[in-house]
Image (cartoon, rainbow, N blue to C red; front, side, top):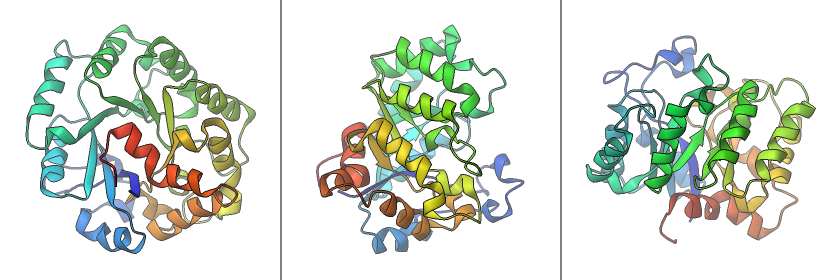
Length: 279
């Protein structure tokens, strides 16, 4: 089963996406129907839909879409982690339409002013509830938050974490030693998985696969194919050349890997992490 582990959809007629206000190419609605030709062209069997805004209403909508569209293999949604009834909120999502497709939770930690937001006790309490529900937790963070990520990962070995976009490093310059070190330290935790995603989105219009290779090589070295999975970051990847260019770059970055490794990155790892059925 070939899986794209990181796809977004939204309808601006239903809900605004304020973060797109300064990004004209993204300031419209995006549907799976628009993505479908690319999925067929690259033989992608399923996608993981990932939340975009920290609004309670979005996750039930994504789950309803999953219930209606077999291309949606799993959903990574959102709940207020600091809520006293977070466990009940998770149960409500899982028992609603499409709830069986809920595989993980994500919060826009990258937008939090406190670099140690993840270390707050109310947040940790919510993360423990996510673990108890059998869900994964996805980390969308920036490099200055990585120490808090490392502390949190070490404190919660019972929770499987997924790192999105390599923590969004500055790809306009070579990888910093601090970022490389943090990736390898995270990779040292067996319950942390990473996505080979977001690099072209961060690079913008001008990039080459070779220029971004040091970042991809670091992720491959730190996590290995067994704990790495491809994510297009569509439609955000339109900022960096689009779906075809992003997938082609990921394939080039894995040129030195064997068939088994490529199968892991392009599907098998995601199937393991999100509990997807075998192909």
